[in-house]
Image (cartoon, rainbow, N blue to C red; front, top):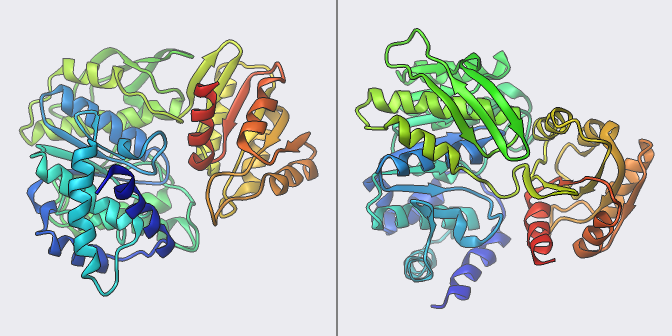
Length: 428
């Protein structure tokens, strides 16, 4: 098997769609010898911030000397970046060898795995083969019935900010959605920590932890004190709490932009305190280095400072509200928005959020075969709300248009927009 053949295996499985439930992943992992049982885990669920929290956590643990796996999705830059050990993407050799095993097992199944289930199997098999001390796993969607929930009770269950996303799939309201995400808290979990969210959702998470006899804590965002923020990142202090074993760290550097990332960092740092209490050796210096090296493509990423080109995968109202807050914090003049969204998102709400900051809009179609909202339909929605919007048939044409406006450019709307745009921009 060649590398492109291995990638095609996961691509071809996309035709099976998204099918929540653990039956197929259990069958698949059992045929592989249940490699997921050989690695300790940190599991990350939530609506916004999962990727950032997972990355910061993995970076710190690697800096502390632990062989650390990281599984995140969707692919933004390259396929291999989704599965890493100590910051190194899975190699072509390991990708092909492990995919051959997964494909062989899948062919024996009466109900073959979906693309994400097969990808989850690849990550868990790879982390076991690489003898990881810990692996940080980002939930794909939800938690309770997400294929990543095949892992044994994790050392930490981290719940990032809760919000209304994937309505109709995960639930009809915040409480139902929170119930799905809280499903990663299983009996035997070392500790569960949550980002401050609406009480309706947090109450469900707290009840799940209590029922499973898992220590639960909502982190205190007041322990984070911002010193400085600019296009290079943020500098902040982490204040001690009254709780025994709490840390106090000054002048921590975080390249990730947005005030929400400070609360994400607070969730990570509270997690480090919990791991220390469990006996993990995590020096202060490892925390400093880990945070200072945490960089994420397509998450409020500055690709060019002058004139500004800012790229973000924000795709739901919560994520876009954080993007709007950042633009206001940076005191930017009206910007040119380069947008491409999926049709199953709350498009109208997102438009309402960005409209006051937009001098003009270029609309493009995301790179998704079934869920993409056409650029022309998006432009029509913006024009109906009073915004000047123009649609282009290709991403490259839309990017060329945005780059000629002379205004700061903010590209956002979906990772299926941000990923391809990033490649095009860097190529240019």
